[in-house]
Length: 52
Image 1: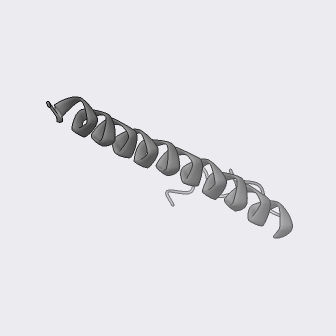
Image 2 (image 1 turned 45 degrees about the horizontal axis):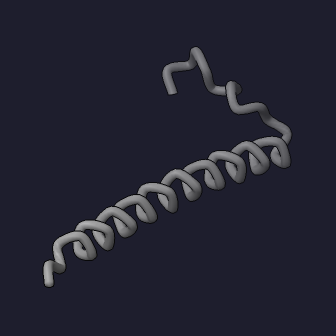
């Protein structure tokens, strides 16, 4: 019995899940940063053009 299809599927699921979790986390972080900036009363572009 050949086990390679199962091994390949396991790797594909693991890598796909890792990529999906990373993208989801990045999106949540950006939303949280935008919400924190709004609570501080400053926009995300406040320091633009000041060399910071």
